[in-house]
Amino acid sequence: MLFCKHSKNIQIIFLITFLYSCKTMDKKLYIHNPVDNKQSLSIISRLYKLKKVQDYEFEEKFKSKIEASYQKTLEKYNLNFTYSIKPEGAIYPFSEIKVDCISDNNISASKVEEVCNEFFKKLDFEYEKIKLEIK
Image (cartoon, rainbow, N blue to C red; front, side, top):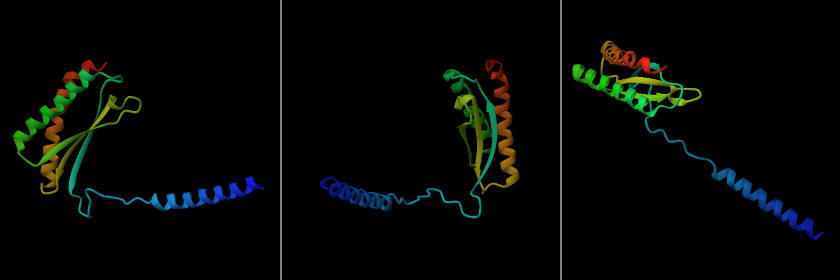
């Protein structure tokens, strides 16, 4: 009898704790960069296949080629744009890299396309030069 009495108390304590924890688990959602109906950024992307296994030196070399292509394009156009790099590989994340050319909407769509095409043209040229190392 004594055991059953304590087990009911434990069950009640557990239930109160569970209900309280459910209430406190409610988290607020914070949006750091809210996007209104007007898209504030223009993004054009390309996917580049790299080595299937980790090769830090090669990855750093490719990263430096991206930066060099960006700097050359920036010098030519002097517009407000940047790039981002995102790993996309299934087994090894850096076996494929997604490169985004990002600009704000203060630049006309045709100019954004021109700038990003120039950036990717320079990057494609550099990629073709190091492509022999991939295999």
